[in-house]
Image (cartoon, rainbow, N blue to C red):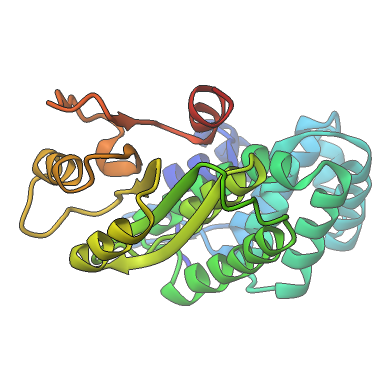
Length: 293
């Protein structure tokens, strides 16, 4: 169960701390607990309530009116709004509440309806990725348990695998892409989505997944000689600096373009000796500058 400061509540709900305090004082929207030093502490229920209240308020309902509504009325109104308005923040908040509650049915229903309403690619780029960024805030503040993180990641992972399996396998003459995560790298949601986009764009993909030993990667490379290698680096690479590791990839895989994303390279000022290495920040950059080039 999460315990949040007012600043954490502000980040997760998008409502300024000053506004939250006013809502508490004037309308008793939530009633936080307080420490002996009078510092506000908020529960999962408080977080869900603020998320829902902010959603209604952002869609034209006055806070005085919301404060008089029951939980059931609030839920019904949110459902009505989500069906009629194309606002990504509404859907991101719905997924966040389902995650907090470990409610697989609600999460599955919300995500499936979004895919039907928009399409798979749009849903992941515009909704799922920002949602995962919100999860990152929860993780950094220790307000999401490993169980919640695994729960939500596995549901998203299942969707991606099903979508990839539904794509037509490109011919053996298509350009080849090898996708992998280095040793100790376990967070593969981003890489799976890159796999989906590349396969959809007609590339012949070889997906190796998580924690691939470097020696095994070299063996696969020697078999297929891919045109591109795609990876993501979110944790520090053992035995190497990030720059040393990128140079190692360039030396060991001399016939491939190497595309790298992830937290560890987002702000890296990397002057590579090899022009075959390309760092990219997000899915949009991968699509516009690499896949569709």
